[in-house]
Image (cartoon, rainbow, N blue to C red; front, side):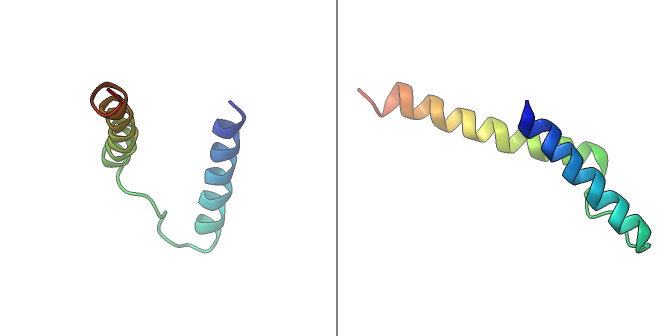
Length: 57
């Protein structure tokens, strides 16, 4: 849970910094960002499942 709050705090700091400098926020559109993060997580979980069920026998 600590990592979640740390990531949120870092994101807020970066957002404030970029807004202060009047730069575009360095993130993709909302839905694309969420789907990209979900894809990375799902890929990691699928890899673990493949290793556990197919490669350890």
